[in-house]
Image (cartoon, rainbow, N blue to C red; front, side, top):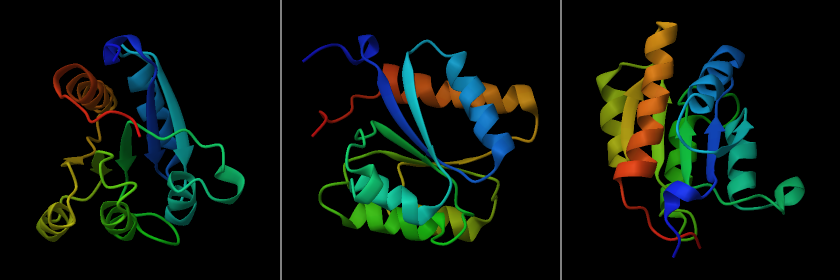
Length: 148
């Protein structure tokens, strides 16, 4: 198997805030790896993408999902529960990247098997630094399962 550092990293960002989408994109562009960032703005479409349904039949399986909790339609908690209960999707790491600091959100998402929980910084440079840290940790330090 090739060294993941040399590959294109596929990241699915499930986020409905245009500002946070731009900040995440900028943070990843400043990172070390070549990435393919796919943005989906609601939970229903995110699950269709992951399951390669309808218009997403040719979707690329992401190496990592960055998931906001507060989404229109199906919220991030429901999306996380669906991902982690689906045998075909459960091995995809899911990072909760949200504005929430609520203890109940932290506890619930870990019970639903989130791989980590990060509260979005409000400061621009700190936000970019956090996104770069996510990329570095998940693709340079952690050993991920092979793509299916």
